[in-house]
Every structure is written in C-alpha cells, then in structure tokens.
Image (tube, rainbow, N blue to C red):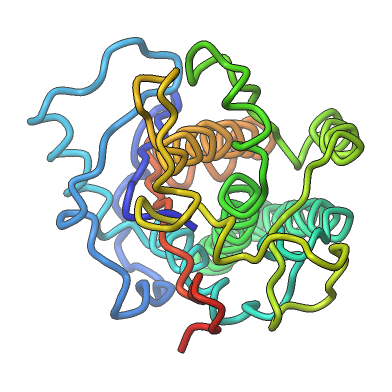
Length: 290
C-alpha cells in the first residue's frame, strides 16, 4: 500500500452521537506502530465540496477523530492486512489473482453488511454495547476492503497502461472493484494486458512465467522502481503519485457507497472518517515483511 497519505472523507450527517451516562467497552486502538492522526498531518477532503478546509478546521477535525473507536478499527484493519493476510494473493491483488481479489472484496462488504444488521438489531433492542461492538467490526471489515482496493493501483500495471494515454491525471478512469461495472472493467483490461506483480510468498500464483516481480512493479512509495518513474507529459508526476491519487479517489468512492448503503454507520460514527494510504509492510524487495 502507500506512504502515509491520510484522507478525510466527509459526508453530510447530523453530527456526533449524544453523550452517554455509561460508555460500553471500546474496541482496541490501532497497533503501536500505527502513526497517530495528529502526527500524520493529513490532507482533508470533503465529499461534495469544492474547497479544502482551512488549517484551523483541519486541526479541529483531527482532534475529534483521534479518539474515535470506529476510526481506530478502520485504520487498524488497513495495517493488519499485511500481517494477517500477507500470504494471500487475493488480499493484495498479487500474482494475477484477479477473480479471487474481486470476490474477496465482495465477500468483505457482505460481511460488513451482516455486522451492520447485527448493529441495527442491537440498537432496536436498546443494546448500546452490542450496537457499537458490531459497528466497530463493520468498520474493521471496511478497512480490509479499502486495503485491497488501494492495492489494485499499487500492485498492478494499471497506471502503466493508462497514464501514457492521459492528458492529465484526472483523465484516468477510477476502477471500483466492489461494483459490478468495476469487476467487468477489470476483466476487459485483463484482455488488454492487465497483470499484477509476481510474489513468491503469495498463494495462489496465477501469473504466466516471466511476469514482472512485485518489487519491480509495486508503486507503494516514491522510491520503488516503478513508483519513482516520472511521467514527463504529466508535469513529471511520478507513477507513485498517480497511483496514490487513483487509490485515494477509489477509497473515497468506497466509503461514500458504504455510508449510503448503511446509514447506521454514518449515524454512529459521525460526519467524518479518516483512513491512510500506507506502505506495504510485507516488503517490495522480494522478501516478506517481518
């Protein structure tokens, strides 16, 4: 995944839940090596807005999000995928395992929907602790899906296929693998030469012999072989920055779709949600991460 670029998704809802007399147990915070929101200095985006937040508003929003238990679950999942599922090609769009990757994202969203249903049932019965516990699980699963969606841009040759034809970065199509049309588009692109990097520790391995390695193809940071390549016709923008832009846009779309599909998550969480686009901690030098 990508270097520490945090994106803030803003949706129009009423605000934070009212204070409670007794708070139920909260889900655990992100792992110790997950950087705090206040240290990441993230850019802020607003769904449906043309202008960015000013610095003061930005800081205020981050202070409110720093202790949000749902955001903690979302962020934790993004990082933990490289540990819990590091050997599964489908979790990272590795080894040309496209069918399994898109099915995996679909199954994660189905799981999220199940957790939202449990949260709704708990809320209807007046079980606040059960409501929040199920909602936290739903956010964790959404974080897992975000990781896979972002890896589509980091671990495939999609940027290499599309950027040379674009007059500007915003001309490049944003693929949404969780939507039927996105899955169909990936199938079409495979017929045109779309592939993902070969990872020797990943299972299964579906790429033809001689396919570019994960280390050579990955655009997880500005220093990888592919990520550092500059595109002169796009104002010398690096392929890493193009991949970040596309992953960010796809992530925004996924979270917007999730909040529209499951309004309860938006109601419980409040109007803001933050997530990272982070480095693949499994390593891009041919060695699995520690």
